Structure formats: C-alpha cells, structure tokens
Length: 443
Image 1: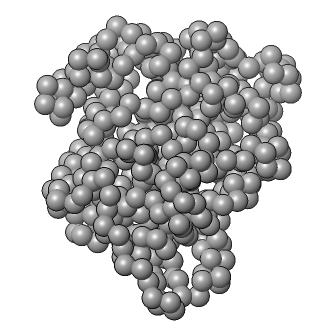
Image 2 (image 1 turned 30 degrees about the vertical axis):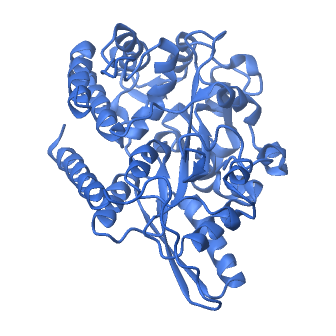
C-alpha cells in the first residue's frame, strides 16, 4: 500500500473509532424524536452527497423546487468525491456536527445503526401510517440492510445491479451485430474471448484499446461491487460459518485467478493501463479506449452528458456467469439517511420522500433507479435501453456480506488484490487478508 493510501486508511479508521465512541451512549432501536418546527420557523438542512455531477445537478434543481413550495426551508447540498466523502463524513460525526441528510452506501448501515448514528424514517413524512407503510413504498429487496427490527433507517437513491456495457461501434468493427442478443457472452470464458477480439495493439504489441479492464485504484467498495458476483458464483465466502475469514479458500483463489489475474497474465488490462477517475470511474470507456465495462445503470447518464457518441451506441449484456444455468449477481443501494443528531428529522425525511417520489424523472435525469414501487412501469423505464437484459441480474442479485467491520475487511481484500496483481501470489495475498480480517474481528 502506498504512503498516501496508508495515511488515508489510518485516518478513516481513527475517525470512525472516534465517531463511534462519541455516539456509544446513543439509543439504537429508536433515536429521540426531533423537535417539531413551529409554523413558519426557518429550517436549514445540510445534505451531503458524493460527487456525481449528473445526479447532483438534478438534485439541486429538485431542491430549488422544494424550497419554492416550502419557503421556510433552506437545503444546502455539499458534495465530495468518493475517496474524500466518507473521511469528511466521519470527521463531521466525530466532531458532533454531522449533516442532516447523509448519502451512505448500504454496507455501512450495520455499523452506523449499531452506534445510534441514524434516525428512524418518519412514516408521516412519507404519507403513510407506520413503518410497514414505508417498506411497502419500495420494491423488495431495496430496503434490505437498511431495516432493523422492522424500522427503516435509510431509503435508496440508487438501487443497482452490475451488468456488461459494450461499445456497439466496436462490436460492429469485429463483425458482430450490436442488436443481436446472442452476441452477449454467457460465461467468463466467453467474456474474455470477446474482450480479446475487441482489443487493439500497435506494431510493438502495446495495447491501444482494451477489450475490458476492471476499475482500479478507487475505494474498497468499488472493488467489492466488482468481485461480489464472481465470489457468489464460485462459492467464495469472505466470512465462514464459524465467524472466521474464508477469503483465502481454494474457491476464492480460483475466482480471483480466473476473473481478475487473468487480465494481468494475458496482458489485457490491469492498473497500469487504467485511467483512474474518482468521479467517472469508466473514463476509458467514455474515451473509447476500452470496449466493455461491468457497472451499474447509473453510468449511462454520465455518458449522455460527457460522451454522446458512446451513449448513442452502448449495448447491455447480462453479467458473465460461471454457470449460466445457475446465475448469481450483485445488487446494492447508495441510500439516503437522516442523522440522529438532526434537529429537523421529520423535515429531512419529508424532503427525501419528495426527492424520490418520481422514479421515472430520477431515472431519466440522474440515471438512478431508486427502487420505488412502480418504477418499472414508468415511460422512462420503458425507454431505458437494455433494461430487459438487466432484469436477470436484479432477480438473482444479493447484497455484499454484512459486518460491523466491513470497512476493514473490504480494505484487506482490496489490498490483497492490489498486491497479487503485482507479484502473482494470489494465495499469499489472500492469506494475509484473512489474517487481517480475523484480527479486526477478534478471532
């Protein structure tokens, strides 16, 4: 791990410890009710979100609309890139001054909930009678991982799966019809064979266009959302039934060898060929330097704004499988929650209900599927290219493993990947990751 990243990880962990210590006395099952604002009282809400310009630009427009309807409410949207966002959030929590509205990845909910950092959703703000009424507003399993003992603590801004996106022009160049669903690779071998056909090299054999590459050098969850489908397919577990690390099992070694290290072994990809961009992770795909990516439905809105030729020609295929007759894939949510320390919890939830109330508009403008009941029946969903090919991955998807020490566990796996792509020792890197995971879990 380089010095900068080591300092980043150490700072994040120290801030998390500080935040959780400060909140250790907070109740868990139900945060205290915030004071009800007096009629006409001026209310200011802070809303923190990770930087994704297409989405945050749309959210700012929605904030203006909401403020016009509620002139006593002021909402400030603050955004930070992925790598900075969580560190700054933990620092604000540790200082006792968290934002009112928090953008939070689903894997973080167990640790934030356990320390009482989150306010329960307010049924009245959603126009329903009780917590079950809120649950019924969203498709299953969109609220999984954010609901504890029947109480909702977060609602999804993004309800995602991961699929293959391919550049249709590149497919046509090698004689494939982008409109023909039979060109979609069913297995990992099919997928990498297609990637080899799509790549281009110069006279010296250097790659000038990658057929495929993983996203490298970003945060631990970027890695997790890429490897989780493969883990499930190969029977690779992060934590075994005995509560101990299983990431160094033969199944995990095989998975990383056949779906990650293969790129390095065959000279097709790897971190040295990737352009790292914490805002637009698929920069190489947007620039035409890469023919296929594996990512979520949110990505297409960025291509529409920044790479219109790519947007006009992208093709969607289901996620590659080890066994196509037994498909397994990934789902996750980037959710919105309200701080337990917010003075105006009900007003914050009321704004979030408004923000998520038109899933069709949110899909069209921000590229986000928010999981609200009825989103599949919207005209915007009907027009979303490739949605029919994504549905299998939604149907067979599962959230990443749940753990109060997920951050440390995910960081250990990320470090293992970045180690074995350099030295080729997959078993050794995963053994080290397993030792670290057992240490943080007290095993």
